[in-house]
Amino acid sequence: MSEYKKQSAFLKKLVMIEDTADNRALCERLCHVERSERCLQCACRLVGLIALLGVAGLGYAAVLLPQFFDNSTHFIIRLCSAVGLGSCLCFSVFLALWYSYRRIANRIHSECRLVIVKTLSAKFPSTGNVSLPVVNDEPQVKIAVLRQTVEISELAEGGFQKVS
Image (cartoon, helix red, strand yellow):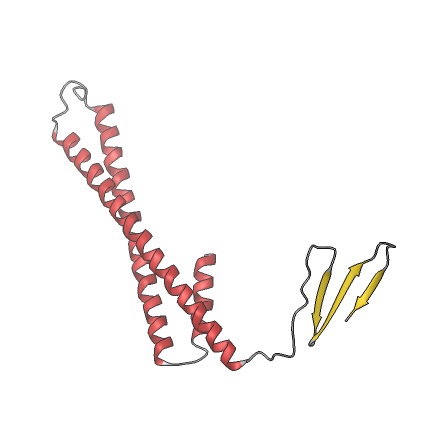
């Protein structure tokens, strides 16, 4: 399983922590886009295989037909050229569609992340009492701990002084 699929499965599980109609609809949209993306990947593989068969047919004709370079209107040459060209065109269209589905899937992933953040912030509300330490790359460092600010400034003598 690829990293992208693992992340997608993890996001689906996290979204479904709170089983609401909106969350189910979001997971269904994500499943639909992923299914379409897998279908396009299979189509790209199939078209790539057909293109390789067309190129192999042209190679066969170039090696085994003595009049290949003199007269290129032979039926096999036309057939293999048409199959190869059509496959290349289909491959480019399928690749563009796959790119658009991937963009849609990434957009739905970001929506899932927003839903997860909202769900977790509702279940675990943050209190104003706890704050994280903040460290700056300046000579003066401020550390905020439980509503008390401690400022440490470097003195000329090399010592430190507690202010506040």
